[in-house]
Image 1 (cartoon, rainbow, N blue to C red):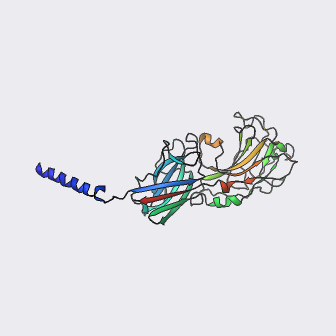
Image 2 (cartoon, rainbow, N blue to C red):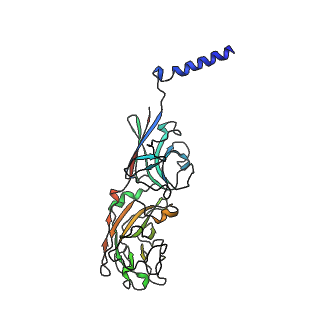
Image 3 (cartoon, rainbow, N blue to C red):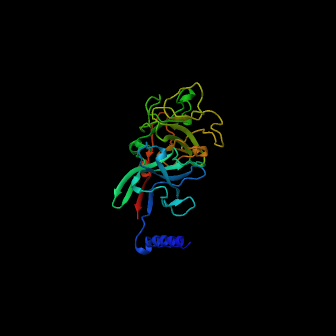
Length: 328
């Protein structure tokens, strides 16, 4: 009994002699994150942000290489908070050595998504850079597997005409349609957006919004290239002309429905926007424009065939972030 007591006593003496009282600090990993233009999202509709660090290994750099560093939100003033509303700092419990973290990404985890790997909605990413005693990650949308084409958005153009090709003659009810083309035959693209590869987690989407009631949002459809039709043609007339560009005719009565009034004329009461949307959005998030707005313009009814130009907002809205990891 005395033998075991002595062993315990020596173990305790060794433990405390190595603690802070002896002036020897045991290294502790810590981290911080700052964001710019990363906006508030509704956790019940769009989900929450999550920070992930990949741990280098001999295996492929796949989803299983990533370790969660915690979920977070961003309030209206741009402050990063955890999901309970307290200040957020990266969780380091799964990062044993900060030098083994090769890159960091930020994802949007949809409501109900509880997997231990990143979701398919990746918004920011960046590789490590050593700066003094810290490992620094500058996160952008240009990082691989996020959206390499995003640097091209700020130089893109968007033009449209009012036309209703599915009526049989594009000029017949031209106030009821909007198409991203520059000619009245629908043969020249009005957008210069870069084509998005199949591997991108993002897609384009066009919307018309009622200026008098912003809750009246009309989905014009999603597309990944400027010279292809979008995925929503529900209100067109069957048998009419088909233009192979993004656009929409609102010619059928009670369409699109769902509480939205029919568009009888786009005469000075509507705006049009094009957003960058997470490809894998779910549920009601599909009916709400994401905050990454590329183009916007009021719609003015002109004589048939008059070209209208949209304003490019992307360079002022693109998000970035920086993560710093240290071993203190």
